[in-house]
Amino acid sequence: MLLELDDCQLVLVDYQTKLMPVIAHADEVLARALLLARAAQALGVPAWGTEQNPQRLGPNAPELLALCQQTFSKMHFSACESGLIDALRPPERPAPKPAGNARSLPRHLQKPAAAPAPERQTVLIAGCEAHVCLLQTALGLLEREFDVWVVTDACGSRRERDRDAAFDRLAHNGVELVTSEMVLFEWLQHCEHPRFRELLALIK
Image (tube, rainbow, N blue to C red; front, side, top):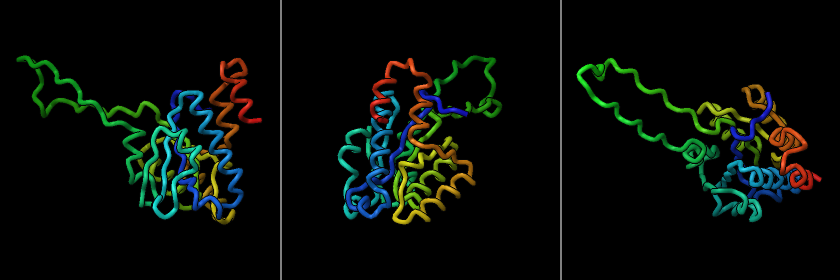
């Protein structure tokens, strides 16, 4: 199963100025997050950010903040407890009332309208720390019936063992594990895409 560009949203979790210095391979992790965010912007994929207790851990890296449509402050480790879910799945519009007539079914016999699925069902997520906020957010999104893909090379923890354990647990729960280049080339689909050269330059 390949990613479909028009079905994707991107969530970037807690790349914060006071947290990143203690993350293993922090420069590469942040560089991969920026690659994803720039590609998302170029291709029209909505990108959202989160910050854990920003008064203590500082804001996200400024270049990343600029690429996100909105960044949500949170105190829970899972970003699903912030306003993120409302951004990923906007509130339903009220269904129009059926025109009444003598032959209309009584209310108790009418079938309730099925809740519409979000316009973009697939959430690509990356962030820090992989075994805490990233993990809990990804599992929370699964519980809310999103298709969740974790971009592994844009994730980090202080200890690599914790990061790897998070990936094992996520995969066991049905999360797809990918890399940032997998994402970009699946979004593009072919080398004749009008943004192919632009994104190729980002990769190189």
